[in-house]
Amino acid sequence: MTPLLLALPGDAETARAIAARLGGDVTEVSLHRFPDGESLVRIEQEIRERSVSVVATLDRPDPKLIPLLFLANTARRLGATRVGLVAPYLPYLRQDHSFRRGEAVSSLCLGRLLSRDFDWLVTVDPHLHRHHSLDAVLSIPARAVAAAPTIATWLRTEIANPLLIGPDAESRQWVSEVARHVDAPYIVLEKNRLGDREVEISVPEGVDLRDCTPVVIDDVASTAGTLIAVVRTLLAAGAAAPVCVVVHGLFVDDADLALRRAGARAVVSCNTVAHATNTIDLSAALASAVRGFFPQ
Ligand code: R5P
Image 1 (tube, rainbow, N blue to C red):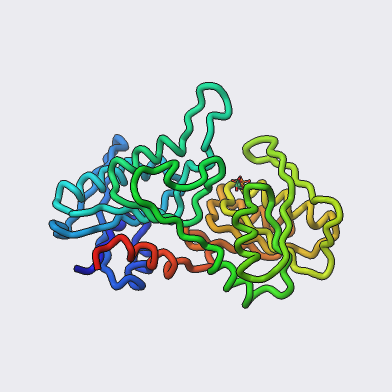
Image 2: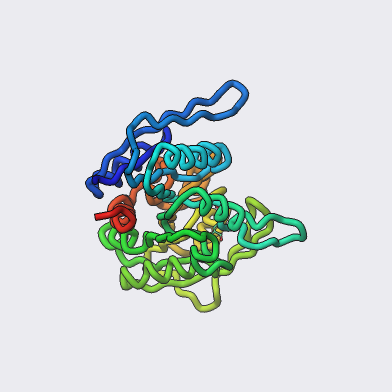
């Protein structure tokens, strides 16, 4: 039977792009918000004896999580044989440690919730730093799609003579992979986080920034404080205006515009979170990972 993707409002476009590659169907789930803030989800399509997957990109996650969990529960109650989750952006992974006494390890809290209600999960480049794989967070089978090959294809056609730049040690895993696919040089800068929106960036000694197009690559841009500091530091060091490429562009409070104002030549994101900067389409890579979870 053809794969069936269930999309909450806001996720239908992503679900349709994946379904088109997968040869699957999409049904839009209705979501009613009561005046008191409670949510009611409804699946009108017959799903008895079907293997289904919810598609939900989980940026700004808190208002989305209750409907998501209710949807998984409802799909099961209506007779779905398996209920997967395609979450192109998986949130809360940056809080992967209790940094101060008493703090939640949010990554594990979320992982436990999702593992209870879903049978499998597909995401894109989860922020795995202290956790070395999704298995450390989830107890269900999971696939992490790598954006690097698709980013590399875009870079090869759009950017001449790139020098790839990771803002901090955590970005090495992404920037080095893209560099391998493009066959371009890369460097990793040093970051010191001073607060939610403020960071200090330094360029290691001896780096030559002349005669290249700097391409800054990171997994997530939230406030864009990191990328803004990188752009300013590179420009101050005499580099050409950098291109900024992120996998997940959250860009709170029009942060992409602030990044352009800081001197970025272009701001580009993958379409894991719907945003005006979406340029790199990962639906083919997502569909191929999702295919493996549906019975042939
Ligand atoms: C941190 O390790 C991440 O890879 C990003 O660099 C960070 O989350 C970006 O946040 P912001 O855009 O707020 O600086």
